[in-house]
Length: 259
Ligand SMILES: [Mg+2]
Image 1 (cartoon, protein in one colour):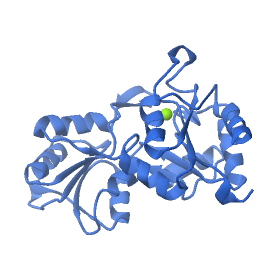
Image 2: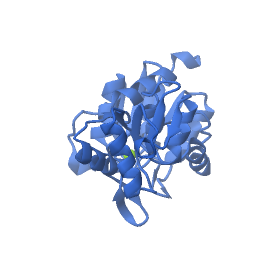
Image 3: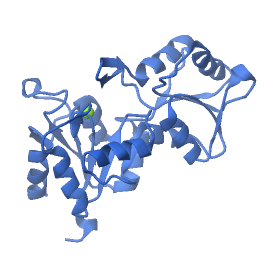
Image 4: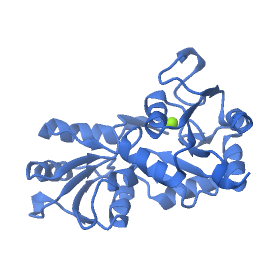
């Protein structure tokens, strides 16, 4: 079977390959074997904060060669920005990197007298009142409002911390403006993944309202694993997965056998 005839694989990360820093037994090995076997594989994350190199390094630390395979909500957000546009970033280094890779220019915003075409908001661990005010002022001055994702929280060693969506919510509240949301399960990231992996694929994830809906947006089949936020007791779920398995180590061979 040549590579082009094989189905492509898109994987969510947290709750699928690991939980925080803790590996999920056998999952990374199963994915590493797919990569080494020449399958088309991408890792799709709403983590907009970390740079691509940092995310590739984390995957490498789990034994997965991920260079060029990570697709973030920051990249999806930047795909909604045109080359040469001026972007006020309320977010982290992953967003700045994606905006610059797009050929757009990161600016300090209306507060400093710099006009912005777009306000791009994600997780900003250096959030301050001044930075928040800059986003609000730029939107009042006519900039477009783009959000990398609307995840309210994300897991950490300290517990659940406020996610990019909580910062987006503050900007929405202050302006009454509604953002175009780029990350899973929305169209910008779906188009980005399809442009990399093609039209025939499977999306493997732990969360129906993001990963499952994202699979639908891409026209991919959805494989649910029970190592993350969804347990057996939560079934049935919508959208209905094509496959449900306890973990990736069981799901990958089942899909390979069926497709
Ligand atoms: Mg997940």
